[in-house]
Length: 342
Ligand code: SAH
Ligand code: SF4
Image 1 (tube, rainbow, N blue to C red):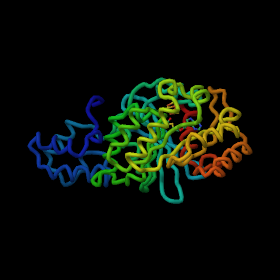
Image 2 (image 1 turned 60 degrees about the vertical axis):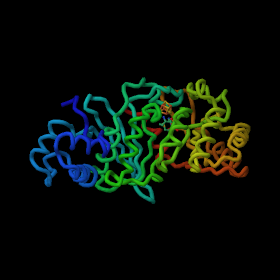
Image 3 (image 1 turned 90 degrees about the vertical axis):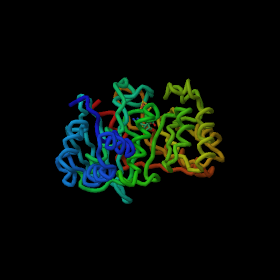
Image 4 (image 1 turned 30 degrees about the vertical axis):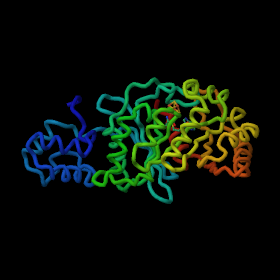
């Protein structure tokens, strides 16, 4: 059972191929996806309009259950954290946030992360394995079941580096966007990366109007290498070049994520340096108060420093947002995950 493929791992075309190879009718693919992505059934037996031989074939060929809920935690502000176990016992989390514009979920792409940023709790846990596309999709479907509401915004900002699991990420994106799949608008989907330069360029050509967020966190290599050792491989100037390339190809505004850490990357000098680096680019900066984690030596910026940093960017005509309330922001909630459970 454990080694069988998850039905959610198949693209629509792959399901059609599977059906044809097994002497089934092509139109069954549409019915099966209807059950999986619209009705969200938990077993093949519930697929009432399928012939018994097809139900048996599906049962013999695929798993349908990817995740088991281990525990959930709901906060006052409408944040729902779900801890799930995978078939091999690994634990992952998905965080749902109720926003005024709709429900937003932050999904996990890997068990652990090999990028190893010094401020991030998931970076301390070596990557155990990549999630399959179906396991990423299942986080949305299971959480919708629990919530009993539709989720319409997806951020790929949970544990893991999505561009280090690129092929499964692409399958995931195409399936959730597919009109016969979850039919989530591409513009409602955001992928966040630590800055894997070749993948940013590849992503520019992926064909869907999906958003891109770059975890920059510093305008120069000195500070950025301290925070993110990946910066030795892909330094600031290469990341900025990749952003320029992406902007040229897609013409889509890029989000720059910038966590504010006390005395490290939150000074006026650094703010002005950031302005220089981003000048003229179609980007907007999302300033995120750092969530302190036990294992890391960093402290959150003071409110005064955060506001000054924000004002400096604003005055220099850089588009910028700063959310101070804890937990309300999906980024903040994702960041918090890391200090728990792991
Ligand atoms: N690996 C990808 C996506 C997952 S991390 C990336 O790094 O972009 C998602 C975001 O949460 C990143 O911007 C990351 O820098 C941020 N983050 C990680 N730990 C955090 C913490 N303790 N406090 C605030 N944000 C954090
Ligand atoms: Fe990995 Fe992102 Fe955490 Fe860095 S911030 S260790 S890339 S999950």
